[in-house]
Length: 387
Picture 1: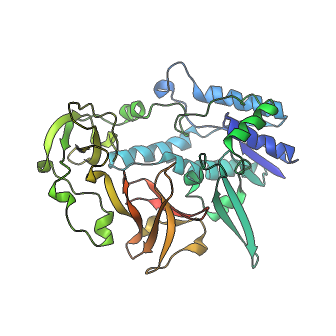
Picture 2 (picture 1 turned 180 degrees about the vertical axis):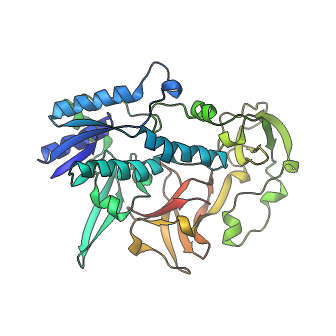
Picture 3 (picture 1 turned 90 degrees about the vertical axis):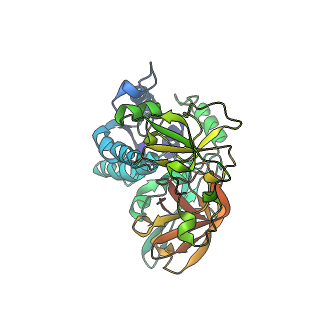
């Protein structure tokens, strides 16, 4: 079977390629060049060149063909521009999720198919299970065997066609076992540290990156007391429960200045530069139209918590369409709205507005634009951006 492996220059994709070679497949290594602006990378490092060289060394070690695919223009158009527009609108995007949907399993997949590949493999910690019923193939996206490395969240927007071509060779491995496999095989990346940068840019400082692209504009930081009446309203309907608090500038006191509300997200602590408070300040709301950042003291501040969220109808994505809920239906799921967040208990309710995610326990740091996901056991069933 001819398989194209996305070699990133890291140990995970290296072992993915190794396993496929050992299984006897015809493997081609393909490195994606995603970014070519070194002005925002960490000084003295040129990530894409270093990573490309490491990927080439792995391909040479395994004896497989290797190519570099330049997708930097497409990345800027589909991912980076999306990220900027989301931040400017006061939302918190997840470019890694879009990276997989729009780049790795779209443009990269199409490039692989031109090489007459039958599948595309990546170094993601997740699994796939496929079945056939009445001549129709159906693919399930499952969590990785290593609960500390599970990356199914980042693949939550993949569709059936994309999953049909996808292979995840390391999904059944623990990270510790993977490192040993790489060392035993003498892979050049065996002891390479995991990347700490954004997957689509590299080792980049996100605040520096945003500030180079988005205009700075001074505004007020307003502190809202935890006993304010806005937190004591009796909210019973799902729509109200799912909405962010409606703050206004007359609700609190100005405690500092910021350089742009679009640089902040709900739950953020760092970067406020306001001291002299008994407890640390956390962002509990932003308003990009008035350019105001609202904060509250302590990680138990009521402004940080909500017990519901909404994904609008047109933005709901079912990995397996056969699992779609109809209007009026509800179902218990395990819920997550950020990577590495422990799965939460709760349920979904499908309405004309969209799907409401209702948590059994109030959740901290829910921000518009984040991707909410729902699981049934170890299957990622669906997802969508938070309204």
